[in-house]
Amino acid sequence: MKTRTKNQRSEIRNQKSVVITKFILLLALLLTLGAARAQAQHQMIGINILLNQPVTDSILQDLGTHGEVLDVISQINIKVTPFHRFHFNSASSLGAGASSV
Image (cartoon, rainbow, N blue to C red; front, side, top):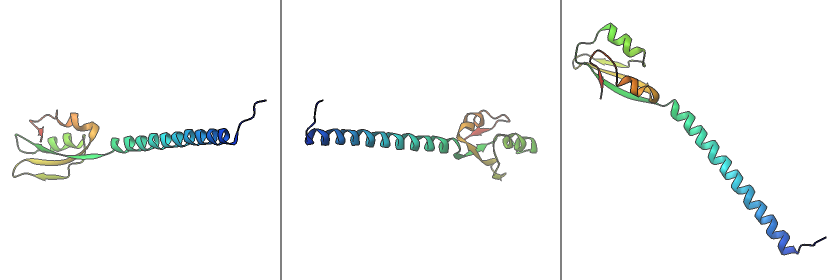
């Protein structure tokens, strides 16, 4: 049986401690990234939609399928609607001559 010196045992303990510390840091990083990704999926963004025609109930209903219409500024035909980030592409392809700005 091979006996280890006190310094060798101390070095082995230090190496184990470093491995455990790295594992804990990696686990914390993965948990943080997972939480940030889950939160990012539910973030809301505001999109201003400029119409090339007067607002109608039909247009408001169509916009309502993509998100809540927060405000209507009929003088300049602007609608303020919050969208989830993953709905942004669908908002840019709205009908009724709408475009997101």
